[in-house]
Amino acid sequence: MITLINKKLISLSLTSDGLHKSPLCNSISLFFYSSSRPKKRISKPKIAVAEYLISQHQFSPEAALKAASTVAYLKSPAESSSVISFLRESGFSKTHLEDVVKRVPRILIANPDIVLKPKFKVFQDSGFSDSDIVDIVSSDPWILLRSADNQLGPALLVLKNILGSNASVLKVLKLSGGVLKYDLEKTLMSNVEVLQSYGIKSSQIIKYIFHFPRFFVHKPESIVDVIKRVDEMGFDMKSKRFLSAIRIMTSLTVETWERKVKLFKSLGLSEDDISAVFRRVPQVFGVSEKKIEEVTEVLLSTGKYDISFIVNHPELLIYSVEHRLKPRLQVMEILEKKKLLGKTPNLTTICKYSEQKFTELYVVPFTNELEGRVHGVEIKIS
Image 1: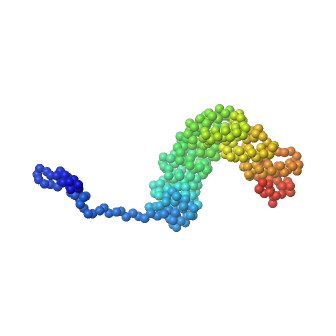
Image 2 (image 1 turned 90 degrees about the vertical axis):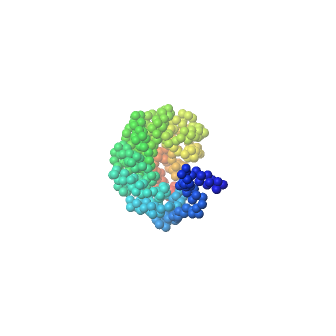
């Protein structure tokens, strides 16, 4: 078969001037009859990431294995060492380094000149110190894989324009450096304008940016939809809780919201009760369903409180069952039984007290009566 093919190829190379082998014929001939074979490339041995991090950079086994679960081998340990050296020289401690590599193992195969240094320069040009940059990057190391010019730079500019100073920007980024991954002009800036259009004061908005920066990176249209839903529940837009209600509802999917409503109904609350709870304490809808059930069960089991009490005091659903609600209920029960209280204080007020204030008011004056342990919590005062 090969001979027939070659004969045809050779015949095609004949010209009217006589026999002449074309380059095509020569190459085909060599292809079929040459005994030579292309030489195999000698690849460099791959280095196991876990072993490399532990032996070369004294990483903890836990951190090294976590990184190795994503990037198992290194082709260029020297480049990886330059990444780690650059971060060390930039002020990253061993703990910071391990955290960055654990969360973003891909950083080990990055070129520091192309990937890292431009990001650090953006922060430096914006007036942040080396220690500031360490705090920001440690908050969310993924920002090191974002574009310096198209994402980080513009995002920093928006934050500074809204918050007014690097100190304020740093405060937000230490809490959530991840907001730098978003187009803040389309999200944060637009959302601020939307909220202002509904009469929410700038001071309240800025306060929320400090505490809940991720709320402001939602799509503006989704914020507008939520505002409409909150308004339909009879919420007063002038209420200080209005922004909190928007934030909570935005954080929940429609399915999660419906599950919470279904749970409250199963506990005996009507539609009006549920709306009233949301208007009084929107944060209740951010509490897990398990916790809502546990608090309700604890309160009803006392025989002193019913569902209407919970509807009127929904903030109780937020407190820790084991560390606040049960111990304080038991302390008050002991004091009531021994008739040591002139008037039983409101449970909501009791739960609002800090640990120190509660101890000063209801534990220290009755040390002998409360000596021992109440529901696993030591009451003894030293």
